[in-house]
Length: 375
Ligand SMILES: Cc1cc2nc3c(=O)[nH]c(=O)nc-3n(C[C@H](O)[C@H](O)[C@H](O)COP(=O)(O)OP(=O)(O)OC[C@H]3O[C@@H](n4cnc5c(N)ncnc54)[C@H](O)[C@@H]3O)c2cc1C
Image (cartoon, rainbow, N blue to C red; front, side, top):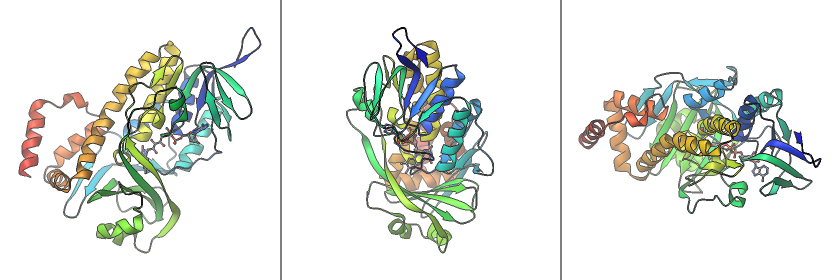
């Protein structure tokens, strides 16, 4: 905290929202020598509907901030499997694995790290308004030098700042639950059927996470499972350990994520569809870029970095939503991936950012098109 000449208390960084994005942004700010205070309307540990898989680039971002996921709570998954009625294709990450961890465990871990790093938390504190200098809560006004909106996909900070996008594209619904069953695979699985996917995340503690994704707000696991008989067999008789709860998911791209001394991060700064599993990794990468930008006193640096970080997840959302929207495309793609595992591995390397998107040349696209049509 800085006390100005007029006696006013000025916090260097105020973050609205103590979800994963807000807390990791606070830890990254502390590592740049900035003081940080985080306000959240809720109390910890905070849960949220989520597939709970963190891609390798997200794990690497956490590690670069000194945060390791404890092996007793996290499951290292080696890659992804796509499964539909007829075909199944698996690709492994070329480098380090991804990790899955229950949201409440992740939240507690991040809170502990942040507290140790000297982050100030205000729990049960809803921000009701912001202006150019301060945020307002029910009890007080807190002045800031930098304000970060990390208040999730329905961000009020974004709205107050006038940064809302004109439209949200391809809104879908995700419902998540957990089952007590030994994970049957060391990869995360996306089971595809007409207009609907079930995402299976192997978890630590003899558990799997199950997320049903579709455009139908009423579609729950019980109604979706008959479309996935092999999966239904695996879950039959398993104890459901958490009640099913859901949220919306969409492709939301913002023209700007920063202005003056204010920036957005995590879902507040735009979203990709949950089926990509990119949300948490995006938040952690953005947190590092934002802390660097604040240290340099240059939010344009963050705006630029944010665009770069989001490019692959946005492209992957578009491709996976094409598969979701057309049974013909989806069947051909999974059949092609099964026939050509190397191709699926190259796509996964782009997804996990071990291979740059820019390395895909015209010849490779043409080759893919040809194989796709003849699959
Ligand atoms: C069904 C589903 C499955 C998903 N699966 C995955 C997955 O497998 N892997 C992955 O990486 N991502 C996944 N995601 C995305 C991931 O959940 C999000 O990207 C991530 O939670 C974003 O974190 P956040 O901190 O930005 O927002 P949130 O986690 O939503 O946190 C926002 C916080 O802000 C607080 N807040 C809001 N308004 C105020 C206010 N006015 N004052 C104070 N506090 C406020 C809230 O209480 C909340 O704690 C999934 C999403 C869905 C919907």
